[in-house]
Length: 194
Image (cartoon, rainbow, N blue to C red):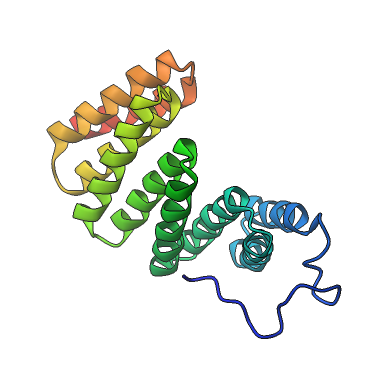
C-alpha cells in the first residue's frame, strides 16, 4: 500500500485524527489545491484524509481519498504511485461491493496504466470497468470509458477501433444528456479520421 503511516501519526488530539471533521476538511482542502493546479499541495491533504478514513474504518471514503490522491500523483507524473493507490482502491471497493467505486477505480487504473505504456493492463482494466458500467446502466461512466478506450487505441495506432470507441462514447453520452462529453468524443472521432 502506498499510503504509509509514520510513527508520529496515531489517534489523539495532537494529530487531529480524532476530530470528526478531519477527513472532510482535508478532502476539501486537497480539492481546493487541486482545482488551482497546485497538485503537489493537494497530496498531503488527501494523504491525511485517506489516513483518517483508514483509521476510522470508513472504507468508502478511504477509496474516494485514494482515487483523488492517485489523480494528484498522475498530474505530477508519478504514475507508479497512482497505480499502487488505484489497485488498493479497487481491492477496497471490491470488498465493499460498491459497484460505482469499482468502476471509477478500475477506469482510472486503466488510464494510469495507459500513461506508462502498459497497454495490456490499461485495456483490461478499462474493459472491465466498461462491462460493469454497462451492467449497472451507468451511461455517463460507460461513455467516459469508451472515450478513454478510444484514446488508448489511437495511441496504439488502431484508428478504426479508436473511432468505433469514440462514436459509441458520443452515442452513450447523448443518451446520458452529457453534451460536452458527446462533443469531445465526436471531436476525437473526427480527428482520428483526418
